[in-house]
Image (cartoon, rainbow, N blue to C red):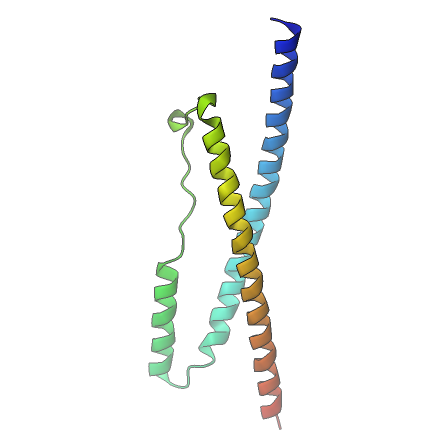
Length: 135
């Protein structure tokens, strides 16, 4: 092999190793956030049940929540290595797909931040209303 090609291959290995490290960090953050989101969902559901003034209202709330949960995304599908294509000719398309998804994810994070702010505000208002009810 030529020294130039060896250097290029070494550089590509270094770049892919750094990408794999970043992907692992992203994955760990994703899993942690997902766990936190599910715990927050559980806590939010319990607070929403406080609005049930009778069994019919509780049934209505539960029905709405069942419908919401039915539309939740399921676990990520894992593709076995035998189904993965390693053709570097397709790499630009795969990279473009990843970039598009990351841009979409950024927008989703902004939307999540807005939803969190809204929930915090409504939680604050609930606390104030409950305090006002105390003797």
